[in-house]
Picture 1 (tube, one colour):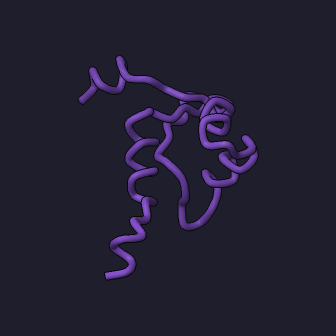
Picture 2 (tube, helix red, strand yellow; picture 1 turned 30 degrees about the horizontal axis):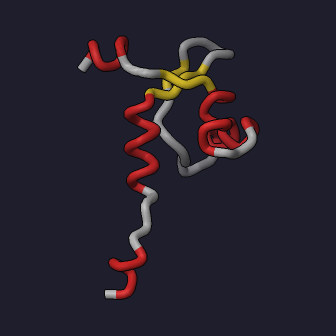
Length: 72
C-alpha cells in the first residue's frame, strides 16, 4: 500500500477544485466541516494538503446516484 501512496497521483487543493469544478474555498471548507465531508486528505505541513487520486475517486463513487436504482 505504501508504494501506491508514493507512486500514485496526488492533487493540491487548487487542482482538486478545478477537477471538481468548485472553488478552492469549497474544498478547504469540506476539510473543516463536522462531520467531515469530502475526500480523504494528507496534511503534509500546516500549509500543504494533498489528495490521493484513489481517495478522490473512491469518494466520488460513494456519492454516485443511479436513477435506475432509485426507481426500484
